[in-house]
Image (cartoon, rainbow, N blue to C red):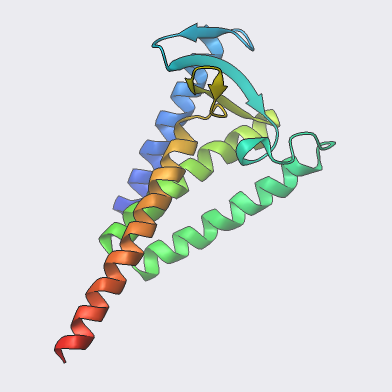
Length: 162
């Protein structure tokens, strides 16, 4: 996949993430819950930490630590996108991860926290709220894992036929 296509996919994810967060913040008050189904709410919440609110109770140093990790990861991803441009599924997964990482990085740098608003639940058990960026990162990671199994299987078949 050409680098400009991979970066275009990442930009689309970034734009969708930022637009959805802007809409939620302009529509809901902090903590406000809008039930949409029997298992899904919109709720405006902020996460100063990482996934599952990891490090969210810290004094603020995590903002720059997590921003540094996201920035470094973004640079590494751009390098990998250019190096492995012939591996389409790998590049698609990296593009999704890059777009998501940049969306959360933008929040972290400009707001000091990440805006989350998607709240799935079963009964009284709620999955931690997340956003479009988190969804893209998750889907990209799943695709990358799938690609690694598919690639191992393909290489194994090629070795057996030689």
